[in-house]
Image 1 (cartoon, rainbow over the protein chains, first blue to last red):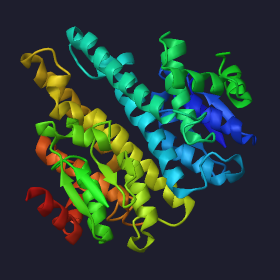
Image 2 (image 1 turned 180 degrees about the vertical axis):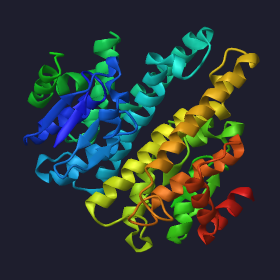
Image 3 (image 1 turned 45 degrees about the vertical axis):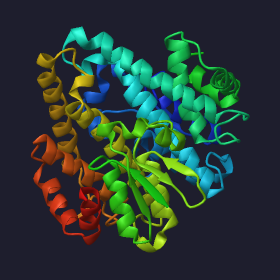
Length: 205
Length: 204
């Protein structure tokens, strides 16, 4: 099993899940800043030019954060990354999808890459502001979901890895404050040995 | 079971899935164009103000297209909308995520809501053109990596086809000519009775 990652990118959440599972795996640094994701060596593996990309032991490739997280959870039941109760498992998937497809891809994508959304530079501040609005609304949803519990589905699950990376970007990269329940969750995540190992491995500790 | 939808929105894909399953369900219209998803009635059910939203028989609410599609497919195994093996499930999820997480919001949202992305009317055509170029790139990639025959995945018809269907409808709206492989898929979808029923219900 090999994970292609870029330090601090959303792949960090999958990196955490692999550390939580605790079985041997490889992690290969893909230098997004130098455009390694667009080189034939990588596009032949994932034509979408994205991390996380997971190459499995039979050589087959799996992409998309929620799909990789679900696959890892389902193939490693002892790691308890997906609640056993089907209703709660659906909830874990729902929260993962929301963190990835809305908070990251709608919120942060506008903040980090406004030019991808608006060709005119004069629009960029407005695009960034809209991204921030989408992301902060997402934080409020997550804060309510964490009310009265340590993790999004009660016990730790794959959904927590997704919330962790979007909080890492907000708190560590941008230096913004998190709402109370989400801030406590973020601290709880950082205290997990698997998260600490991941941060060290990606050179972020 | 009740689906909250907006006519022609991505919720159309879930509408098709419910018709494919064939069990009784209710469908309630909240037009995004009229701000229906921002009414107190809607927010009480889904504070994210998004369709599709599914209210289940026990009153609990499920959101996010991929999750609703996956849950409906898994809880109605008789409809055969998802493979029973884990590998097949993961491939369906991967497709749902690409269609709903990338093709829809990155490619199409800005074409239909250019005003949210442009500072003035003069700028809007540039925003639309950029969205169109992205949508065409994503669709070309999907067609190139097509591994199924009539349907998107080699495992056969699945909820991923229903997700692709709403994107195909949007191609018509946006004036995008999809690659031949995807145009043929659209024709195959349009021939399904469940699709005809969902379209008729949303047009009514």
